Image 1 (tube, rainbow, N blue to C red):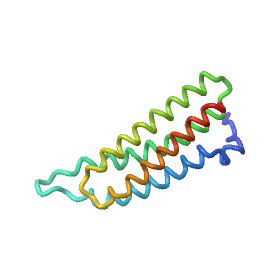
Image 2: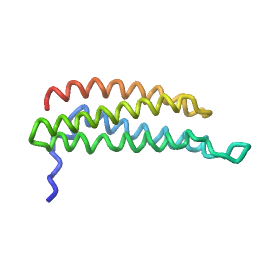
Image 3: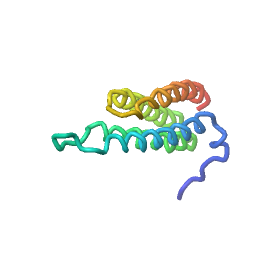
Length: 131
């Protein structure tokens, strides 16, 4: 049986920021994909195109972890979900750094996502204290 999502979840700042990060990473990924989808002169593809998918995947995985942490009854399980969110956030930040080295005009938008991730990390710390 599926547990209902708590009604207060959408009011959590950490949840709202995670939703913002999803929207931002999808937009940036779409923009970067357009520039990186062309083949190189030697016929190979740009390896950075895979990182664009990674930032979308990682940002989309954060929200379910927040939901699971809020639904969990036991604090050790809550902390496992929190640790997972931290890993996803760190990987997302690292992939943003990798994408800043790509050959695209869209890389100029990556610092915006990185600053949002920094704000999210601060919200994470506050939210973790309430778990």
